[in-house]
Amino acid sequence: MRNERQRRRELEQLSAYLDGELEPTQRQALVARLQVEPDLQAQLEALRTTKQTLAYLPRLRAPHNYTLNPDMVTVRTPKRQPIFTSLRLASVLATVMLAVLFGVEFLFARGPLASPQFAAEPMMEAAMMVDEAEPAPLILWDTGHKGGDGLGYGMGGDTMLMEEPMLVEAMPVEVEVEVAVEAPEVEILTDEEPELMLEVEALPAPEEDLESLAMLRKLEDDMLILGINLEQSGEIISRSADTFIDEIATPAWQMAVRVLQGALGIIALGAGMAWWLLRRVS
Amino acid sequence: MDEGALIQDALDGDLNAFNTLVLHYQDLAYNIAFRIMGEHAAADDAVQEGFISAYRKLEQYRGGSFKSWLLRIVTNNCYDELRRRQRQPVTPLKPELPGGETLEDPYWIEDKSASPEEQSEQAELQAAIQRCINTLDRKFKIVLVLVDVEGMDYQAAAEVAGMPIGTVKSRLARARERVQDCLQGFWELLPEIFRHRDEETI
Image 1: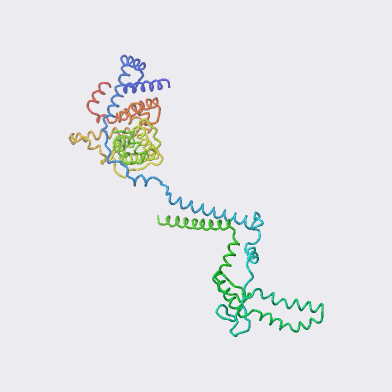
Image 2: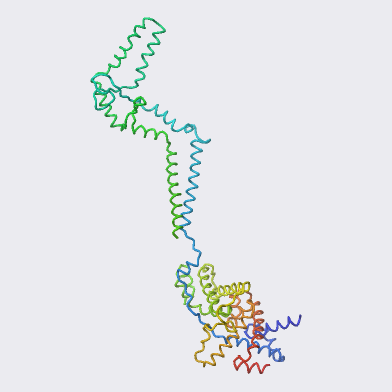
């Protein structure tokens, strides 16, 4: 074992000596041994022959050029495709943000975190506000004189404009109750009720018809009247009223949130579709 | 050739600058790869992959000898391929000579001045040497090729092989010894000058 280790050490020294890589002190010691040890000298010559034989191998030239081209580099590189990644990321982020916005809107507009100002149903509240803010509904009704069908407005001369006809109709009822309780003489008045009603209905003068017509036309110009709902006491339906309702029903922050939701929805869908299509094409 | 400037240009995305380096080192890289792998196709792949890897890893180059850094990548590719073959031995489709070389290998027609008979003897000797190299374990092979075939000193070989100089020294000695034993079987192929010398020593 010791001889094998010594033999290997001698072999290393001889090999390094051939290459000129031996330390000066080791070199001097080896040269001294080589002069007196023929076996060691023979071993050195065998190694030298081997080294020279190996050096006999010719230097080969490359069979072709190994220069790189962009295709080789890009094809072999698992290149990340930023467009795909960006589209997918945009779609996912937009979807997440959309969900968060829906949640926030729900919490602050209708959920437990809703402020008293917006706790009630927005449309109901809007309707209440409209009731308070909007002037009394306008109706058109037939006065019964000067002929005509009595339902037209604007162009005919037989229509008149009045406010709150229900109040006018209720007044005789109140009178009737009072009369029935307090004094029998009033019963005579009760008998004359139709005449009173006729008088009340006949109150507007023909001159006032023209004035009402002018007001109606002015109202048409201002409020963009779309029509009259005959089933609901002749309420005038106008575009300006709808707009007014919307403005009151939706606070500014909710409008902003909805715009943002729409934008995010478009981004989520658009980016997702684009990513899917590009992936299919490629 | 301003190697530093070319490397910097390559780092900036100039592929032509890197290709200038490739052209400068491709013969050396191929020769080492061929001597380690023992066949053209494997050496070709190792060198091509080595240059591509070098281009991709150029940011990791931290100065020093670019030649050593590049050749280390190539030799590592050779090592990986040899290790893979050791696990999954392959049989070449093309008929090979005893040295593991094919008739299409370029060095068969290296010495055009020699006669056909001399060329044949040279080819046989080279094939014998290569066969002896092929018998070595891969950890001895690389050191032998770098020092005795390429003529590198121990420091350069240590940088390329990624091992201490002491390891290079010991492995080289053992590799030479094994090749020496192997070459005994091809004694008649050795050049006359070596035969006479060895006959005298023996």
